[in-house]
Length: 347
Image (tube, rainbow, N blue to C red; front, side, top):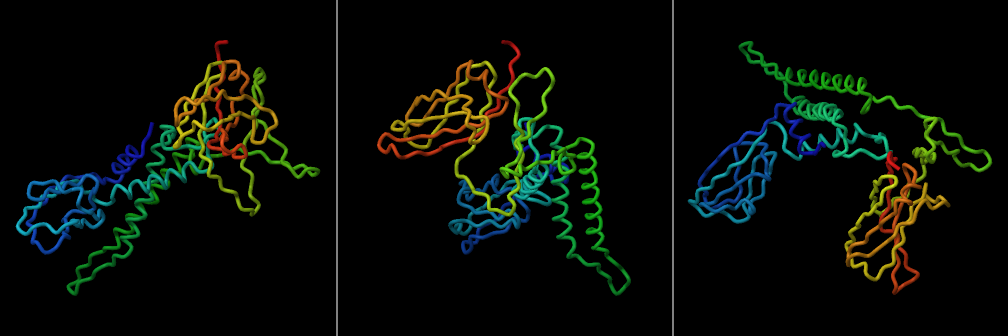
C-alpha cells in the first residue's frame, strides 16, 4: 500500500534530490532574531535549534526555501546557537508532496477501480506507482526548467563563452524524455492519462426525457441481481448542487453477518436513527434496513443478518438519518455512501 511519504521518497530518488544532514553554529549578537543558514532548501519539521544548551526548536519559524530562521525572542548576546537538520538540492518536502498530489490527481482522473470507487493514494495499485512517480518528476523538472530559462549566455571580452542557457535545453530534453516514458508505460499497462476506455452511447427516451439505464454485462451462469452502471451525467451547463453530507463506503461479504460502529462528534442519546440500503438513489425498492443500536453517547452500531446480506447486490447505496425526541419535525442525514458486497462461495 502506497503512502504519500513513500511516493515522495521515490520521487526524490528519481530526481537525485537526496537529503543531506548539516550542523551549523554561530554566536548570537543580541540585536536580531533573524539569521540565515547557509543551506537551503531545508526540512523545517526536522530542524533542531539549540540555544546555549536549551532546545528552542518550537520557538523558531523556518523559511524552508531560503534557509532563514526567525526566533520568537532575540537570543542573548554571546549565546552559542547550534542548528542541525537536513537540507536538499532542489525541493522542500511540501513541494515534493505537491508534485505527487498533482500527478496522482491527473493520473487517476475519471478512472475508478473494479467496484466503481475512486482511487486514493492508499488504494492505488502497486503497478501504477512508478508511472505516477515518472509523471511527478516531469512536473518537478518543469519547475527547474522555468528557473533555468532566466539564465543567459555570458560572453567575455577575451572570447570566453559560458553557455548558461544549455542547462535550460538539457532540462527540456529531460522533461520530454520523462513524458515519453510515462506515455509508454501508460499505453502498455492501460492506465493513467493514456488508458483506453470503452464507453456506451446513452439513449434518452423521447417520451420521458430520461436516460435509458445501462446494466453491466454478466456471465451466462451468473444469476445474481443485475448491476446498474453508474455513468456520470453531463451537467449541460447547469450548476451542480454541492453536498455537505460526508461519504463513507461499507464493504461486506454475502451471507455473513455485518456490523459497523459509527462515531459521532456529539451526544446521540436523544436521537432516533433510521438507515436503509437501496439499489440506487431514490429507488422505490428497499434492499435492506439496518438494525440501529446506540452503544455509547457518541457511537451508533449498524448491523445486518446473514439473510439480509445474501439478498444484496454487488453494489448499492445507503445513508443514515436521525430525528430527535424533542423535535419530531427535525430530520438530518448524517452520512451516506456505497455498499459493496462480495459474492460468497460457501453457502
